[in-house]
Image (cartoon, rainbow, N blue to C red; front, side, top):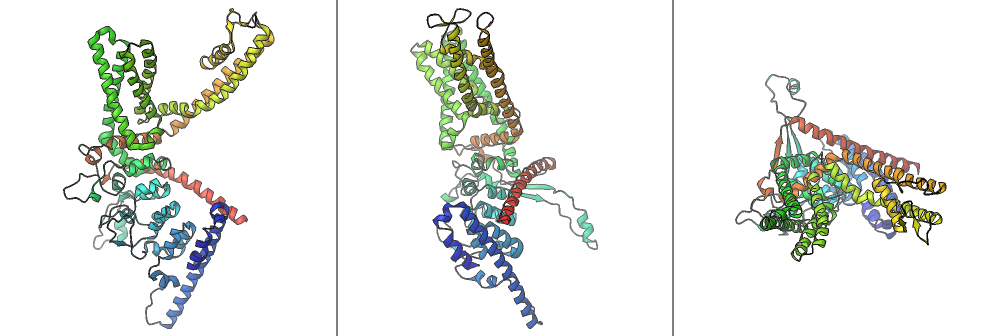
Amino acid sequence: MISLLEQVYDKFIVLEKVKNDQRSRSGFINQVTRLGAKLLELDKERATQQNEEEEEEEEEEEEEDLGPVYKKSFFYIENKPTLLHMLASRDLFDLCEIYLNDYYPEHLYSLDNPTILPNDPDKDTKFRKMPFEYAYAKHFDQTAAFLAGKMDEFRVRKLFQKNQNKILQCSLAEVINHNMKETAIKVLDCCINPDWPFVPTEIGVDNDESWSRLKEDPRSYHFYYDLLDSDQKGNAPKKPQEGMDKRDRFDHLQSSPLQVLINNEVTKKAAVSHPTVVMLVDRKWNTFGKRRIFMFMALYLFFLLMLALGLFGSENWGNEVDMVIKMIVVIFNILYTFEEVDQMFKEGRGYFCDWFNAFDFLGIATIYVLIPLYAFGEYKAFYGVASASFILNFMRAFKFFSAFEKLGPYAKVFFDLLKKDIWVFLQLFIVLMVAFTGSVFLALKSEKSDGGKIIDGKNDTLTFWSTMLREARALAEGKEFADDYDGVYSAPLVMFLLLNMAAIIVVLSNMLIGQISARYEKAAENARVESAIARAKYICKIEKSRFLCGNLRIKYYEKADYVTDDAKVKEILTDWHELKKDTESTREAIKKLQEKMKASK
C-alpha cells in the first residue's frame, strides 16, 4: 500500500499529461482507490488470520489484537507518517472514507512524528499532527471536511484555538480564504454543544428507569463564538495588558473570521444560515447593531433634510440661515468622506464590488463639485449638478434597507435590475428600436415627403432621431407613435406602425414586467438569507474600529453563550437541517450518477 502511494501515485500524478487532463487524472485516482480498497481488505484478512493462529498457539496467554501488518510495523516507523496521513495529504478522499469507516476508525487521531509548525515564531516547539492537519495544510476541502466530521467536536475546536504554547495550529480564516466551504461548515458544526440534563443513578434503582426520566431535548445549547470573533491569529478580543507578548495581543484592525466568512462569495450564503453564525449575529444585532443602525439612519435622514432645504428653500430665509444650512451639509459630507475612506482602506478591493459604495462615492463627490459652482455664481451648472447630487444622495438611503427582512427585497430588486437585467434587456430593445426606427423612417419618407423632409399630421418635421425618440417613449411612457393615424398615413403604413407599437409597448413592456416579477420572487425567497448577510456585514463594519477605546468588538465580546430559548434554537436548527438536507441530497445524486458512469465503463 505504501509502495502504491510513493512509487506509483506520486510519480504518475505529477506527469504533465495527467496534470493537464482532468479525465486521465480522475481515471487514475479511481483505479488507485479500487486497488487500495482491495489491499486494505486483504491486509485485514491477513491480520485476522495471523491473530487466529497466534491464539491457537498460545491459548493460555491472552493476546491483544495485533491488527494489520502495517499497524505494527509501518505505524511506528521513525520519521514516517501513518498511512492515513499519507492518504489525507494526497486528497484521496474515497480511500480515507473506506479506511476509517470499514477498517481502522481508531487511526483517526493517530499522530505523526514531531515537527515544527511553520507558524511557530520561536521554532523550538515540536508538534505531532493528525491526518486532518495534513489535509488542512494542503487545502483539500472534501478530505479535511470528512476527517473533521469524524472527530469529536472539542478536538476540532482545540485545533482552531491557541494551544498552551500560544500557537494556533489551524486557522478558520485560512480555511475560508482558500474557499474550503465544507471544512468551514464542519468547524462551525463543532461550535454547538447541546447541554443534556444529568440524572444521577440512585442506589437500588434500575438504570433504565433513570434514563427514562431524561428529556428528549437538551436543556440548553452552548454556542462557542471565539473561533469567529477572534483575530486571524487566534487572539481573543481583549484589551492588551502590560507586559503582554506582541504576538498575543489582539489585532483590532484585522478582519475577524466572521467578516472573512461573510465577505467570501463561496461561503457566505451557506455559512450565514449556520446556527452558530445566526446566534452570534443575532446577539450582536440585539446588543448594539439595531440601536446603531437606527441612530445612523436618523442622522442620514437629517443630512438629507438639510440638503433638500439648502437646494430648495433656504435662500428665502435669509443669508445667515442659508449659510448655516449649507455648512451643515458640507460638515456632514466631510464626515461621510472620512467614513468612506476608512472603509476603503479596511475592505481593499472589495469596497469597489459593492454598488452601495458607488452611490456613496458619487453622492459625496457631487456635493464637493457644488461648492465651487455656487461660490463662483455658475448657477446653471450648479442646478444641473444639484439634480444629479439630489437623487444620488437619496438613493444612498437604500443601504439601510438591506439589513431589514421586509425592506431588503425591494432594495435588492432595484439594484439587481440596474446591475444585471436592465443591461441585458436594453441590448434586445436597442436592436429592435434601431430596426423599427430605420424602417418607419424610410416608410414615412416614401409617403410624406416635402423637399426631402418628412412631415407628420401636425406639420412637424420628423428626423431619424426624433423618430427614434418616439420609439423610446413608446417603451418608457407607453405612448403611441402619433395622436391620430386617420387621414395622415396610408393603410399599409398604419398596419406597420401598429405592428411596431405592439412589439414595443405590448411585447417588450410585458417582458420587462415579467423579468421584474421573477426577480422580486427570487429576492423574496432569499430575503431571509440576504438580510442576514447584509446585517452581518453591517455589524462587522461598525465593530471594526480603528481605535481600541470604545471598540465594540472588545466591549461586547463573549467567548461562548448558553441559549435556553428552546423554540428559537429549534427553528434555527430546523432551517439549517432543511438547507443541509437539500445540499446533501444533491451531492448524493451526483455521487450515484458518477458511480453509475464508472460501472458502465
